Length: 189
Image (cartoon, rainbow, N blue to C red; front, side, top):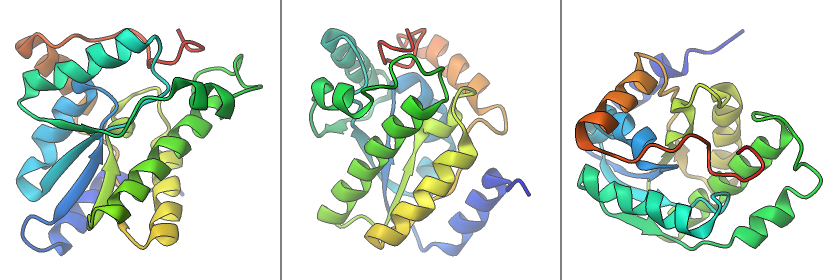
């Protein structure tokens, strides 16, 4: 049975207290824009930019700089593209959405939860489910596993619902945000 993660997100939000601390793993400013618009009123958000999959390095920093157009500052915990390349070794030819993507998403979310634990966050989620190319079912199941591992609540979401992806493209146009045409990984490019 497929779970409606968008509905579940709103149920979870209604059970939280007033503006709990949320760590939002952000893949890029365009995708983050609609997510921020949707959930900012419910949380005190810290924006985590951890995306070692992005290549080349100047693309990484260009994407990071675009967050200023959203009026948010991001916490950047480092760029080590070589570590990402080692993690996905043997999966370079996988199709987008395959094992390479699952490894990448798992790595980034695990780092987000680790950061959340070290910095006292109550809740973690990611913007990744806004992409029509990402599997919300996988992302949410991974979040559930990391919630158990770290003892920090994972906010379920499927941000592409309610026209989330479309809204992200509209906001990007309105604010003149650079919108890339690939996820960032040179193997998907």
